[in-house]
Amino acid sequence: MAIKTLTADKLTWININAVDTEALDFLKKNYNFHHLDLEDVQGESQSPKIDTYKNYLFVVLQFPQWKAEIQSVIPHGLDIFIGENYLITIQHSKSKEMKNFFYRCMKNKSVKNDWMSQNSGYLLHKLLESLFKNSQPILNNIGKQLDSVERDIFGGEQDTSVVKKLAVNRRNILNFRRIIDPQRYLIANLSHTRKPFLNEETSLYFDNINDYLSKLWSIVDTYRETVNGLHVTTESLINQRTNKVIGILTTISVALLPFTVLSSIY
Image 1: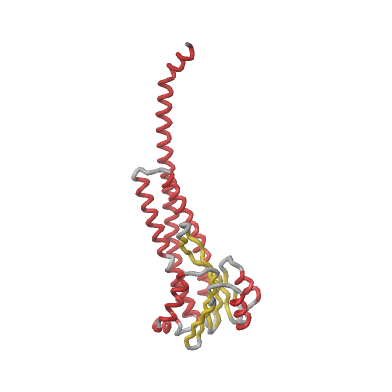
Image 2 (image 1 turned 120 degrees about the vertical axis):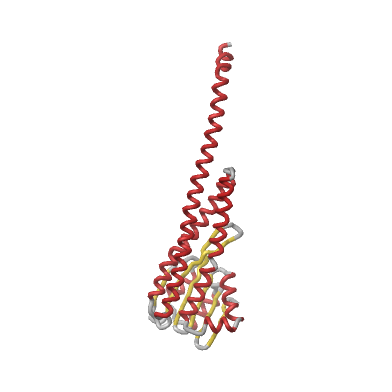
């Protein structure tokens, strides 16, 4: 079943892990959401945004996700409806992180009491904090790969495989930046939004998430400068090696020139 519900006191968390007819009918029947929001939910790719209404917010977020099959960082989209007594999370593709978070809250009573003991804004904060912190291992992996490539470059290996590794890491760094950048402004907007479920107390929690995103941004920006520097270094070393080969070939050609002239005369 695509729809799972978790309730504690007056707060309800509904997690939808697939957008299908059942899920859309459920939203239309039980909630009075704007039809444009429901149309956005049906779309597979949406830009991060916040739509503010009188009784609820509609939030579209993206998180960095590692796709091992293609060795690439891709965005994982999450649509969120949040009201005074409910939080609805909608996934367009299944996420292991979301699944683990939901079942941890469902099966662990102490975690459930902690995360769902307050309002829906606090639960949203715990969810976003967990999902963004799960992106830290992706950055750590990129950092290890850059260290490995750097050792190869200065160890004398400047072949096509090293160039390819640099290109892959540059792509992943740019993808990570592209995903994280709009989330910083979105979380900052959440921290300044005032609703019964988003008060001054919860704004401090979202400010903390924003600080964490700024930290990730600083790290990935450093990695971007590193990979650009390694790319320039690799090109310089390859060009230097190519020039040496051309110089040797030129010397050989000049040495053979007299014999070529004599053979031409005879």
